[in-house]
Amino acid sequence: MSADTLSNDSPAPAPSTGKLYYRVGELPPIAWKILSFVLFFGAWEIAGQIPISLAFPPFSAVMVALVKLMASGELFSAYGRTLPPLLIGLAITSIFGVVFGVAMGLSRMSELALFPPMIIMQTAPMAAIIPLITYAYGIGITAKVIAVVILSLPMVTLNSYNGIRHTSDSLLEMTRSFMGTRRQQVTKIMLPHASGMIFAGLRLGISGGFIGIVLAELLITPTGIGDIISYYRSIARYAEMFAAIFSVIAFATLVLTGLQLIERRIFKVLGQGSR
Amino acid sequence: MNSMSAIRETDAVSANEVIVKAVGISKRYGDGTEALSDVTIEFRRGELTTLLGPSGCGKTTLLKIIAGLLSASGGEVRVNNKTVYGPGPERAFVFQDFALMPWATVLRNVAFGLELRGTPKAEREDVARRYIKSVGLAGSEHKFPSELSGGMRQRAGLARALTVNADVLLMDEPFSAIDEQMRRKLQEDLLELLREEKKSVIFVTHSIEEAVYLSDQVVLLTRNPGRVVKSIRPGFDRNAGPDAVRRDQRYLDAVDDIWSQLKQYLS
View 1 (cartoon, chains in turn purple, green):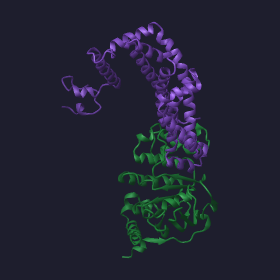
View 2: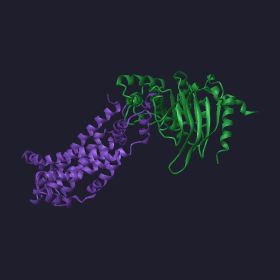
View 3: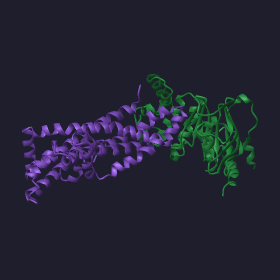
View 4: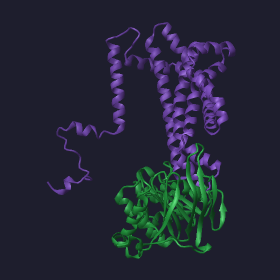
């Protein structure tokens, strides 16, 4: 065997005979993702075909129902009603959650003022509280926005707060030693340092917002996607019901992926510095 | 053999040879512990002075007081004969844990001192590139700290302190988190760099060898409370090169002498 074949940087592929385990390790990440989906949906299909319950249709039937719901336009008009309160709620959360969290991290006063309501919101049993919101705000869009905000705001706020609070002391000291101002400490050290946590909070908040809007639509008045879910459940067409649930998950995943792209862009800019 | 012949006690110098003077510094914490008690040290222009002592002797506290990062309970720090009350442009700090921003490239990290002063991007990056090169990091400008070894990270920390063009470098155990072989290399490179840069350096360490190898003056501190025991000038010829120095009898004698001094304060 020549020294060439021993060297690490030789681009020659592994011998194709046997050694499957060796080549599995070289699969690109996307292959692993697809494999994971195949396994999950495969298991779903099998469970539905057995069937383990009449209320549990196989994956293929759900997909057919999903296509039908989309073709009839029913799904899209449902999202037309679900999205406005969701987006308004998430916009409120993104702005106020980050502002509150950063304020709590920077000032003891706002920490004392905001910590208890955040904890209450985070631990409150939402299913029990949403009907109360309806008493106060009626069945309109306001009540739904509030449901979204209650379920998403604490995660964004508390994560942002923790990100700011746990800024490395040595980086703050470094900024001081080079005569940085307090403002520079906040903008150049604390916020970038916390941005990972802030984005983690936003991800959790968006997931919470989706839970909030579906809960609100199921519990307040059946509208939008909540209406589809409860209507098809009531007439026992479970494939359509699961198709609606599936669409919520798929949509949330898309939004979260979009957020991840924004996050990467921001980190790239941070690495090179401004101006 | 008289080992004392290898060293000279510090003698008085004229005022303009002194760049930094700590006068009667004491530091008492809220719980009553006395970290430093009446510490007076003169640091001469263009020299490297180490603060050497066991852990708990307050040497890092003293350095941070000189840097203006901590306030003293008593006494004052004078730089160029003027009392200072906080961090200043004539002093730059090198941190034990490097204090590099993990989200920023080496280039941005090194230029950060100038960034804080509002130097335009193109200009500060020019300066940063020059010092990245002189500390031996050329080619790593766009790497992130996580992609660098400990030694390379501290080179970046040193480059950052050099970019702001301060007269005094304050180095807080800069090589203690770095493995032994790399530490020796960094010590040699530091001396090499200082020959060109003409800085005055205050260097904190707990390694006797490191102190003697690097210093024009070694200040011995002891603990409970931290105070100056002795100030020593290991007067050997540094131009002979690193390997000759480490075998020089005067180097070895100074190490022995300092050890015998410090030994009595341990236990």
